[in-house]
Amino acid sequence: MSDLQTPASPAGAGAASSDAPSTATAAANASSAQATGGRSLLPRNTLLRHLVVLVICAVGAVLLLESTDLGFNAQVGYVAFYAIAAGGLTVLTGLNGQISLGHGALMAVGGYTTALLLDADEPLPLIVIFLAAVALTSLVGAIVGVAAARLHGPYLAGATLALAVGLPGLALYYNEFLGGEQGLTVSTPDRPDWFTEIIRTLSGGSPSGVKWIAYISVACLLITYFLLANLMRSRVGRTWRAVRDQEVAAELAGINLGTWRVTAFIVSAAAAGLAGAVLALVVRLTAPTAFTIVLSLSLLTAIVIGGLGSLLGALIGSVLLVFLPRLLRDAGESLDMDAAQAAEISYVVYGVILVVVMLFAPAGLVGSIRLAWLKARARRAGARARG
Image (cartoon, rainbow, N blue to C red; front, side, top):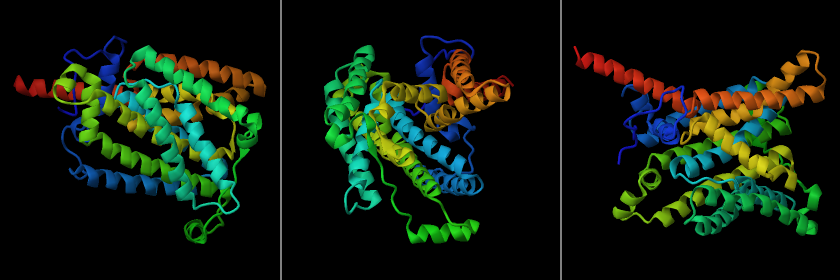
């Protein structure tokens, strides 16, 4: 099965149609080499290509964090946990075709696990705590995935919605252990000496706790996207696409649909668990109000706006999710609105922008750009063939 499955009659960029989701994912599935006419400066080997991109992104992230103030560093942490969770949801929804409205609850599992383990008298190393959060959330994801493996469309969305509504409520029921409505305060892990020395060498200053958390968040984001990108381009990713695009053909080919759907749910839940752990560090609090259905819907919005099935789209959608309302609020305050009015207007304008994007770019931002590029390539190839 090819990585790129371009529909016979792709929808126009300016019109929403019933095949828009498949068009979106088809565009997102195109490799960078395909989208750039087969010529690329990056290695052809997938693992090496992703390693090069990882190193370039890591250098870019260091330059970004060292050239901006602490306020922006804190915002980068927010983008990181949104993008990690959105990346996992991209695997589940964009690649495997399952809709989840419960990823906010899965993030709660990772967040509370991190808060409890960091609150111990002698906390474990942070990487061990993160792995524990990922493992426990993966276990919850496996249970939910098995229960939801035979569900589709609105039935699956309804089942995961119940998870999003019910799971954070456990913090209220076990209030002595999980902190109830007030939640748990998260202890910030100490900065290691080697990190302090590196930052002093790079910038000449002493790193703050905010910068340390920002670096942890970015490192988690890069590692998660590196692993997901390789997984999406592997046999596993191709099998998920087969299950999404042609269930009957996949089953006739010997693919166990239920098993691969559960696998996608586990991978997605693992990313959500890590995102919850990063959220706990960035916000320094885990409370039921942080993991409501609004969080799950925001993640779904991010991957739809960015482009289904694309990690770059999930990242762009997360950036918009964090920065666009703030930019709109600042713009409102510059027009002599008070803070409350600017906040209300910013969300109205934000919603209008999202609707406009969906109307004129139904494949998402990344998917629409790639579709336009592929169409331009096809027109050039047709012109050359006609002489």
